[in-house]
Image (cartoon, rainbow, N blue to C red; front, side, top):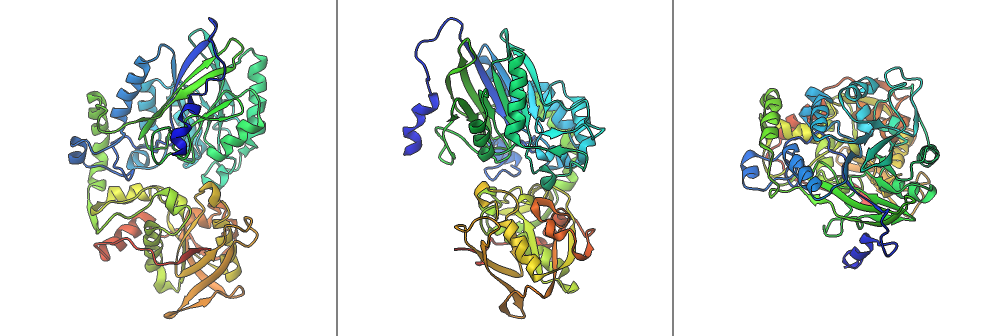
Length: 524
């Protein structure tokens, strides 16, 4: 296999012979944890106590603590950093916001973190409160926050830490399209990532820092562009795209690390399932001479820290009544995998869109469009708890109904398939609608080929001039994920029930629910 053949390249010994002045550093890293403080299943959702006892679960903060402890013991010089999106994903965030993340990260003594887009889900004020609670720098270089009172003079672009007698520069990076993905407000201006990083590299270099790490929550594609378009960046610790880079895991996207020019790029999937461990050696000029490592799978063989298990249990107590309530049954696994739902029709997407449409069909609504970025997990077969439903749909989004033209529907679908190559969350899952799209056409230049709507029992071509009633969620209706064409919709009502409640009730009424796809989305 090509990946196996390239394993030796991941070690990347760039020069032979290590001088006495060489400096070695172990970079331990996490990203996209999304409040998975308890162990998770192979589907990244909740894992039962019985399965955990049998060693079938992954992750959880109690295992992460011991994985970090073991990794630190293998190195005499290490740092621990995070690539963003600690916020959002389970009831731990819904109930506590950033307080649990702050407590746990402080306990592990993180050295730095970048701001992920989900750190803005509840506005700048919640992020500011989190920053006040942690004992490490939280960074974001590619934004002007001077006009945001909650973050001005608080959120730094970069910083310097010391380890083993050497200065290490840390730079933060956040998605440039964060206003489309979260709720940063109108006072923050996001800027080009490469220009922002280079500006901070130049500043740090002028201060005599020659070992520079970018903590990037901008995705694997952007990380490679930043590495290609900048000079002086040694390592990029990535996030946002939930990319698994590995020399051993079958589902890996690429080797670990990926080298672009002189920059080593790493990322360790998501949800606490892996702990990244990159070992780098620098020469006296700060140039990497060797970069090698591998993400550590945090499976059932990693022992849980008893004190953390107890603390998480205390924190979970107020949540249990809600999440342990059985609300439905699944006949088989309902696939909400982002690598599927963000590029094609998926069973979880169909179920959510159908549930949304069924809830408001008696209001004359005929089309449902759901953004795949709102789908955060799969559900396995068997009893389905409200906690599982909330893990799939954690954002507390509400149903929105509105009226737009057929042409606006086409424009929305065009936006939805415009960033498939980057596996972005704007990919549309639909109901009451069929469409085909051609990836060979340039984005926003006519990828959408055919669109049909239901007319009784028949499918008919959509009429661009006709008016249609749609249902989506309030995030999409408000222009999130690039759906700006919906912001001026007629007769909009954004205050329907929580989409998670709608899904739970639909599954209860139609269970046991079997997964299904029916060709409503066709890739040409």
